Amino acid sequence: MNASSEWPFPGVVWGEYPERAPEPHTRARRAPSSRAALERFADGVAAAPAVTAETFVPRLHRLRALAKEPGRWLHEAMVLAAAALAGTGFPPHRQQLLAARVLLEDRLAEMATGEGKTAAIAMAAAVAALGRTPVHVVTANDYLAQRDAEALRPFYERLGLRVDCVTQPMLAARRRQAYAADVTYCTAKELAFDYLRDSLGRETDLSALEQRARRLAPRRPGDAPVLRGLCMAILDEADTVLIDEARVPLVLAQSEGSAQESAFYEQALRAARALAPGLDYVPRAGGRRFELTPKGRQRLVTWPVADHPLLGHRAHREAAVEMALVALLVLRRDHEYVVRDGEVTLIDETTGRPAEGRAWSSGLHQLVEWKEGVAATRRNSTVTQITFQRFFPRYLRLAGASGTLGESRGELRDVYGLRVEVIAPRTPSRVEHRPPWLLPDSEALWFAVADEAQRLASQGRAVLIGTETVAQSEALSECLAGRRLAHRVLNARQDRDESELIAAAGQPGKVTVATSMAGRGTDIACHPQVLQRGGLHVILCQVNASARIDRQFLGRAGRQGQPGSVQRMVAVDFPLFQKWWPAWWLRRLSGSVSPMWTNLTVTVAQRRESFTQRKDRVKLCQLAAFEERDLTFSRQVKP
Image 1: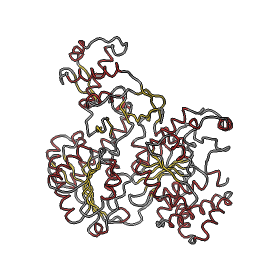
Image 2: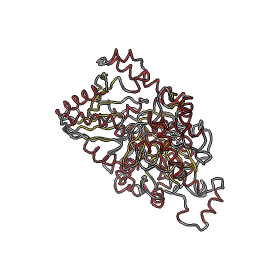
Image 3: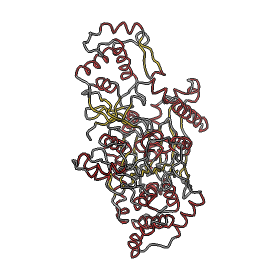
Image 4: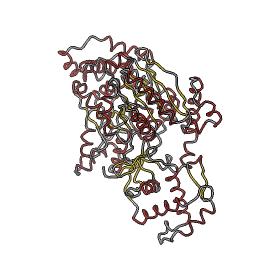
């Protein structure tokens, strides 16, 4: 075995489009090194003599000569990667070296927020790229993909590597150019959709020799695959991709439907608005869907008969009206979606970001459009689809990092065959955890949050406030404006100003209100004056089904050993509390200042919700019209 056999790349050996055949995901990809071996490797790289400017390039050129000695090659490649990173002004510390080595063993590294995951991933990606493997670094959103590619460009160029990024607006030719780089930063959705497009234009059952022969045959430039195969992916915030969004179908679609069908949905919505609750319909599945009563079905008899065999069918009409009730009563503007630029745009419940290209299927999206009075789009029909749970195991090499992998350790091992290695923090945390507050209702909550934000801002602190929905962020914004407290809002409406807003969020006296958009991957640089006065203060006003999402938002404070403070402030009328706690308990705790009872209320609600979501995932998909079966990321066939 030599070093080159460890690193797949397009060619005769691995095929022109390398990928792993679909298979059970339960087997580990390779035998892992012991923790002691990992520690020795990191210590050896850290203790290596400094690489001087005069010797760097010659040593880089000699690296290929070590290909027949995998151990020496890997050590030398990591030493050079560490030297290149130090040359950009960011010398790596031991924990980053250890994490990079874990990633190069196709494992998951759990690193606390602020410990330098970005640099660790970059070193691992660079080492793999030095072995000729095309590497895809998967980030949480387009903003981070572009930011990291630009920020790390000097590091990669020092190693003789080319880095690029892929973002949603790019056309096929530009994407092909970006994927031709040694390291490409992109989001999971862009990557999967490009793979689906490639799969439509190539024969996946051809042998490596047949694929090579086909590649040599004349063809138009637009027919060439965009990707170079699935050689290696490193996932930043791996639990979001592999757990939170793993089962949402990514659908490559083409427009379908007709004006007659659009009018049918308009009629269904009109009929649903005329129905009376309790008499004409009753809730099912905890109020997430509805069922017509015999009286309600009778009221639909007057619906004008259509000559279309499906649209004129009684059962189809009743199902459409039941779905229209979901659009009217369950899906809420500024909660599950926003309306901007004359379009209905869904909100990703995990990240709080606008989910461009995501749509409800089976006519539900069109019903919401009619409800909001915007131009109705055509229904999409599926050409091909995949989920992250089926897509990422097709990579020949797969690794990732996150600060919140521990509680999903078993699921990640069982589903993907990926082991989690915990990297201890470099320095003790300096974050102050203040007692949580539980307020009687949301109105009281916003006033209390405004008081706290005003007090801290007057002290020269920077304040970041996390809300669950767009509506909540705007309700708090109105409360802050009423006090004439200057602030900025970051939510699915204002995402275009994200980079500017985040850049200013660490200034003295700055108050920023944000949804979960400011959670994963966001690094708020604090002004020295802010650090002197205690650092960034984070107020979390949300209770997510997954405690991991809450911890990610709280992790914006005290990054890289800096001072900071965090506090949870919530209200008893939050949906998760209402769902899992009896009314008498919530009334008793209303206005409680006891940290123990508040933490108990939050923890129990989160655990019950998380357990239910995992246990009944398939069942919920069948019951709720807008759950994972019908909620899809949809893209047109043509990029």
